[in-house]
Length: 344
Image 1 (tube, rainbow, N blue to C red):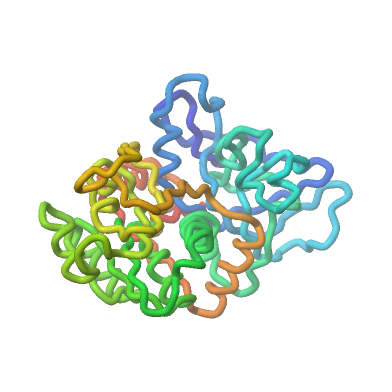
Image 2 (cartoon, rainbow, N blue to C red):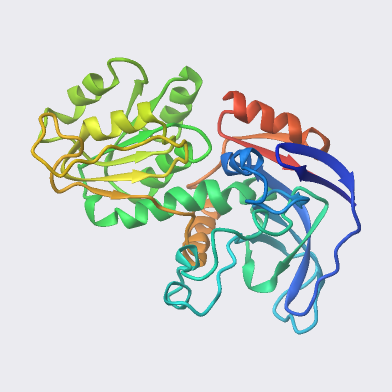
């Protein structure tokens, strides 16, 4: 079968590999679509030895059941499925509570991260990682497994603060950010303020439910402050889907005293925190800072339900498998709006 693999650090190429055979408790899935994520760029850019090579990338996967391994029940060939990419230990406190994204035994990894993923015609996954998607198109289902799940999980963590009439700032209207706007619009009565440097991204934010859009630039904080009021008031929740120094500066500059900062983007920026009465403060008193990671299987089921109800839809650009390296180049250059989805 064809697969796009990281054959060495930073090297992504299409190769021919044997079609894998599912073992006991596993399922062979015919891949229908796989999302291209910034996390894949982090893997490509990582130092040698941090991730295994060669490895087939791709952790946002949807497709159809092909072959069942020994002992697998409850699935039939041809069923449409989405893949929950995390594989925890199953026995630690986090896993036993259903929070495999907080596994305390297994380092960050999973399908497409520490074992072969979905940038191929087929992928083998544990049967426990599958969720049904019904009639949802696979090009829509695939992005839900991370681009939808990660902001959904972040929003769930901040749910007590998302009271009707409160203000939420979403920074970065890319693959995750445009989903965050839709999730907020579908599940809350908050005022949504979207921030991005790209006009097309701001237009997308408006189409999917943002009440206000603010161009990123030197006066971003002042323009958001015109909407949320001066300190110590401000945004009740800020969701930074970028995570570079500039966006973190914006985030801490507009959050209210006692507000919540959700650092979803993995841009490598630094958030200064000094527990003193600075003016202006590095982070306002009472502010909680959370770095969410992915989400739970139960949350993914809820995200899929939003997708099937027509309340959550990815804005996708599709690419055939042989153009996967090009899709990642465009993603790196910031030329993908919404989510790039590769179709084997």
